[in-house]
Image 1 (cartoon, chains in turn green, red):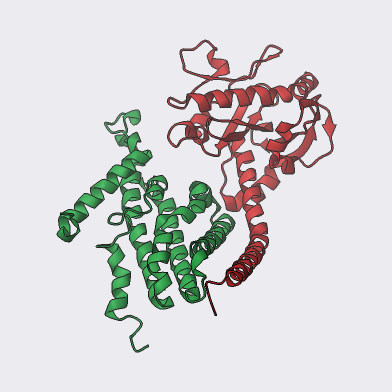
Image 2 (image 1 turned 60 degrees about the vertical axis):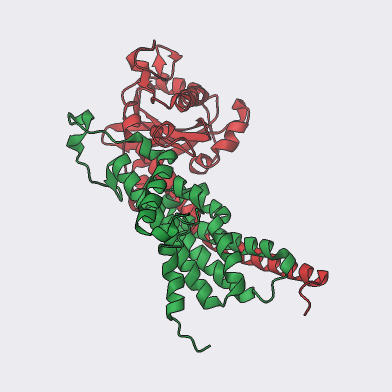
Length: 214
Length: 236
C-alpha cells in the first residue's frame, strides 16, 4: 500500500460526513436517538462519543473479518459485533460515569439499532481496508455527534436556561422571581428536537446547493 | 475455503458467539464491583437527602457513616427482626411482592443538628415505571422532616419533577398522623379537600405520577404503622 495514512482520499472519509454526507441531516439516519438524548448537552456528548467509538471499532472489526464472513450470515455477524461493543460501552458507563449512564438509560442499548452503524458496516467496512474503515467510522460518528450537540445546545439553552448545567439566563429574569422570562417547556420534549433538526437541514441545504433534490 | 458451505457458516457462527460471550462475561465480572459501588453510593446519597443532607458522591460514604447512627429491620408488627437494612433498600421490588406480614422493613436513624430523625424507604409505581424514595420523620413519628424521591422513567418536565428539590421541599413540616389515624399525605391541587397540613401540591401535567406517589406514601407508611405507633407511645 503506497497511499499515505492521511492522504486526500482518506481525509475525505473523515470530513465528508461532517457536511455533504452527514448521516443525520443528509442520510436522515439515527434520528430517534437525536431526539431522545438531546434535552441536555452532557448526555448528548456522551452519546456522541459512545456512538463514534462503537461505529469506528465495529468498522475496524468488520473490515478485518471481511474476507472470512460467510455471506449468508453477514448481517448477523455485524449485529453481533455491534451489540458486543455496545454492551461493553454500557458496562463501562455504568462503572465510571454512573449519573450519565442513568440519564442515557435505555438509549445506550439502543445504539445497537442506530441505523448509522449497520449502514456504515454494510456500505463501507465490508468492502474496505481497516484504516479507511476506521476513519469512516470516526467521521460518521463525528457528523452524528455534531448534529446532536447543536440540537442539545439549543434545547438546553432555551428549555432550561443553562449550558452544561451552568446557568446562562439569570435567575432574576424569571417570572417566578419577578422577571419577564420563562423557559420554553416545549424544547424539553422530543418534538421540538425534530423541528430543530429540520432547521439544521434547512440551513445546511441553503448553504450547500448540491444537496437539494431536483 | 468455500465461504458458502453450510459447515463453514455453522462453525463461524459458533466460534464467534462463544468468543463474544466469553469476553462479555469477563467484562461484566471485572466491572461489577465498581458498578455496585455506584449503586450503593447513590442509595446513601438518597437516604441522606431525605434528611435534607445533600452530599456529593465523593462524600456520601463518610457522611453516611457519621450521621446514620443506627440501621435495623422491623416487621409489619413493629418488632425488630434480623437483617441488613441497607441491603434491603436494593431489594424493594422483591420485598413488595411478599405479603405484608412477611415483609422486612428497613429503618435508618439519622442524627443531625436537629435531633434524631427516622428514615423509611418507599417503593411504588409511577406512570411509566417504578418510583421510589425515602422519607424522614421527626421524633414524634408524624411530622415529616424531609423527603427524597427518584424514578426510573417518568416524563421529563412533568412526572419527573418528583425528583426535584422544589417538589420535595413541600413535604417538610407536613403531618402523616391525624390524631391516632394514619392519614398520610395527599398529593393534589391546592384547592382540593385535604387540609394544608396533610397535603402537598401535585405536579401539573404529572397527575398520574402524583397519584402514584400518593399511593406509595399511603401503602408504605401503612406497613410501618405498628412501628410508628409503638415508637410514639414510647416517647410519651
